[in-house]
Amino acid sequence: MPPDHDLDDYVDPYDPGQRRAPDGGPGALRVGIGGPVGSGKTALVAALCRTLGEELDLVVVTNDIYTTEDADFLRRNAVLPDDRIEAVQTGCCPHTAIRDDITANLDAVELLEARHPGVQLVLVESGGDNLTASFSYGLVDVQVFVVDVAGGDKVPRKGGPGVTSADLLVVNKTDLAPFVGADLDVMRRDSDAVRGEKPTLLISLREDPAATDVAAWVRAQVRSRALQSA
Image (cartoon, rainbow, N blue to C red; front, top):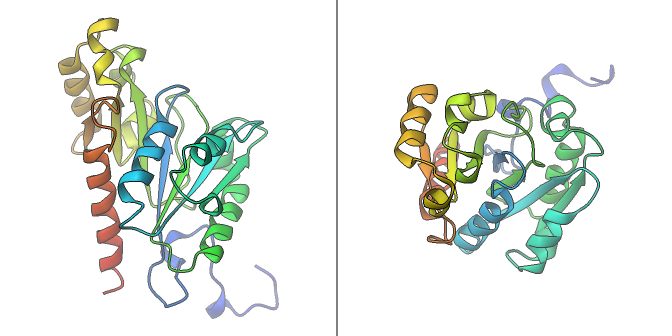
């Protein structure tokens, strides 16, 4: 903190409890979406934008190491106006930019929030990472971790912070289970065993392009945050 700032006026951008919208409310809900390469994170973000975009004021930050591939995909598919999507090129391991040094992502989120006053929902998509990936709660309020059936039904029981500590675990591509020999009942059982009471959703974006259940969960988190300002 600069020495000439009054302690009573200082807002720590890394402390989600201190974030406030211009009207004094709690500000936008920030949802981190992480998971391994190819698990379907970008497809899930696209589905959420299509499903929630007309009812919520939302923006998206994507992370790639050296490219803007995920942001470009979202723009090509016109899931949101271009000025509601910002890309971060991490230049390093994806978890570094979402957990260890979140400055670039914070800058992108704050740019979008300044560009769109009144935004209600910010989706922050991590670059593809392993099962240890998790977001700093200085960057997001809740975390979604996405794994896919093609990785095998052993993935949930392997645990790791991404699987065990995320606020929501999404097991994606359930339509592939018969083709890769994965047992969905085993994945559901093992997810419950390592996650306790935290929810897990098994989905197929091919069968449900609207990601209905995930969208309902996100919608509930937005409502919960809005109640903080009531």
